[in-house]
Picture 1 (cartoon, rainbow, N blue to C red):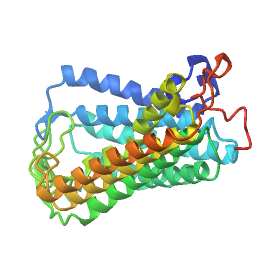
Picture 2: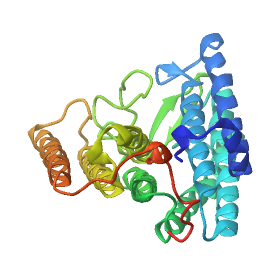
Picture 3: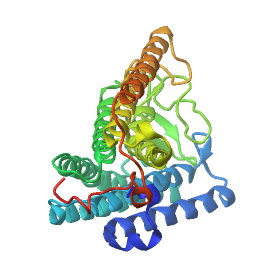
Picture 4: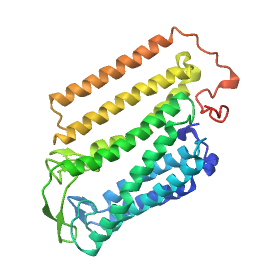
Length: 341
C-alpha cells in the first residue's frame, strides 16, 4: 500500500519522530503563512517569511514520506528507526534556523556576518546539513537491499531516494563551485550583510520567479535541488495511478509491466534532473533555455514516449492474469503477503 492510498488509522505504525518532525514543519509553514500576511518586511523583494514557509512544506512532505517508508522495512528496522530519528532532529534544527533568521529579518544562507544571529545559524547548518545527506543515503541503501512492496513500488522508492541524495550533493557542489565573489547586501532591517556564495550562478542573488524565487537572470542551484528532492513523490504518484488502473487495464495487471513503466519514468526524470543541473552549472536560467538545452529535453521526451510505448506494445504478447473479486487490490503493496520479497 502506497503513502497515497494509506488509511489514516494505519499511520499509527509510521515512524513517530518523523511524524513529529512533519507536524512541526507544517506548523512552521502555517505560522510563516500568517507572517507573510501581517509582516511587511522584505528580503530581496519577497517576504522574510516565504523562505521558511517553503522549507517547512518541503521538509514536512519529505519527512512524512520517510515516516511511511521506514514502516515498510523488513530488514534493518532498528537501524532505520535510528536513521529516521537523526533525520528528524537534524531537519528540525535546520528549518528552525531558517525561521530564526527570518524572524530577525536577515539571511539564513550564505550570510557571512559575525553577529550573533548569523553565527548561530552558521553553527546549526555546519552540524545539521550533513546528517540529512548521510541518513538519506543510508536509508536509500536499506531500501536497495530489500523489497518494500511490489516491483513498481520498490523501484519508485529506490529511484526516488537516489534522486534525493543526488539533489543534496548537487546543491552542495553547485554552491561551492559557482565561483561567486563576496558582496554586501541589505537585510530587512536596513543592515549591511556580507554574503559569500549564492543560489544563483552567474547572478548570485538572482532576480527570480514568483514564490520559488528561482533566478530568471542566471542559473540557480535550487532548480535541480527541488526537482531531485521531490522525484520520489512523482514516482510514488505514478505507481499509485498505475495500481488503480491495473484492475481495469489488462496490460497493467502484470506487475512487471508496471515496474517497467515506473523504470522508464525514473530514467526520464533522472535525465531531466541531469539537464537542469547542467543548465544551472552553465549559468543559464531555467526559463531561458538555449538550443542545446532544448535538444536535450526533446531527446528525453522522445526516449520516454518511445520506451513507454515499447513496454505497452510488448506487454500485449504476454498472457495476463485474470482479475477477480479477490484480487481487486492488485496494485496494493503485497509485502505483507510475501515478506521474503
